[in-house]
Image 1 (cartoon, rainbow, N blue to C red):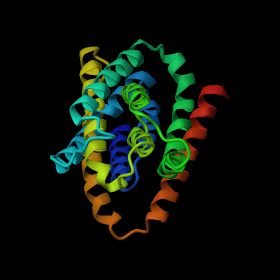
Image 2: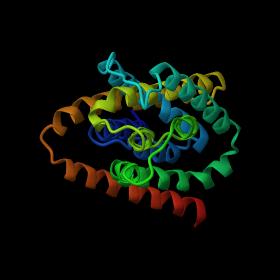
Image 3: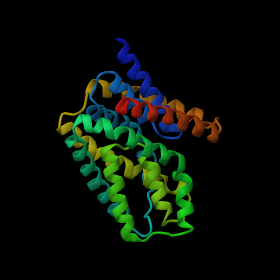
Image 4: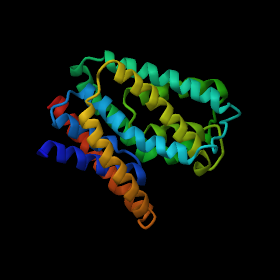
Length: 250
């Protein structure tokens, strides 16, 4: 086993741990794949494929626990998210690698901000402005586009959006969140596979590591302080985002 394969497997392991604990696993997998010589667009597609099994498994765990958001049916929400995810995937495949290299740091920064502030900004805005159904449809579509195009911290973005109009506890929204994220990723993967954008060997290595990491992350997460987990995850995301900016602009 060569060094790059070991690094990719280790990245998958760490990404699985992160996703099980707090999210943000793509922050690890994407730079490692790029460092292994895979162009950034293909690396993003490959990372999405590799991390999909863990997300799908989570969706199966929450099967039957999805609930409407502000009276909007789960089926309608899924349809909007799938259409957005497909649009985002097509946009990614149409983006030149050099342009995506310039966009990537900003996408990573957006995901980092979502990780940092989404859990609190939603209730804050809800108490002050609220939202109605039409903006929810539009925003859900845009988040689906983001999920298909890049996807970092997309689940937290959904929670922040939904908290603007729905007073339910975040745990009560977990089933709906996992279903929507899995749906956006699933349609994106179909687009990536059809376009031949996936490095399947690297994806399989990443996926194996992510499944192991997700299992141990779920076990360890019960014993660790949520504040410690969140702080460590955000620190890593900030460092990697800074590295993306340095790579793209310096």
